[in-house]
Image (cartoon, rainbow, N blue to C red; front, top):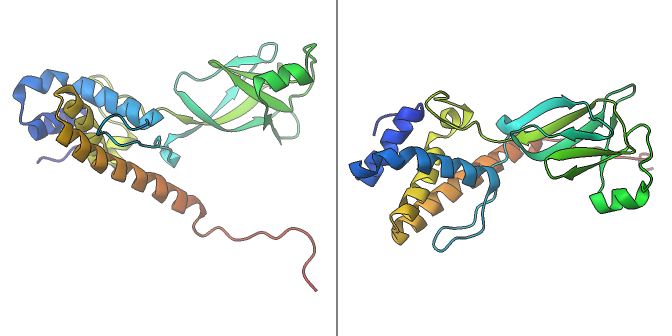
Length: 216
């Protein structure tokens, strides 16, 4: 099998593995479904195993939001927040508050320096209400492959995961339960390996920080 380096070679690999040239035109759809599966994860679907969403350092992004009356639209590629920080004077990390609790604590729409935030639909809301900028660190969706976007970080880092995930949905399309299970297990294993490798890269050699006085 030729190396998978871009959108075209991934489509060809999907078609070759299926040994079904009549399904070549569906390969972009299988790839798009694979991207959605990796972005969000899923419970088990028949013989397709459950998978956690992919969350690795290449998906981390930072942007500055400027709320209007405490509300700012989230980025279009937003999946999950990592950290929200007030960046006006002295940087301070905002704590998460459920929308219901925010309404209880700030029923009159109190304004001031933000201390908390909620995610409501496709917006970030601050409590107290502020129009000062906040920094959002978040996980962004995998940049979708297409005719105009022929490569991304994932196809460079883990082309086999891309292929196996696409083959899961190709197998589902043709109702081949054996291949759904086989390709699903391969994709789940590769995905889990990437997530674990990412965690090891962040924390494996992290030192222990003691708080308080030293023992006597």
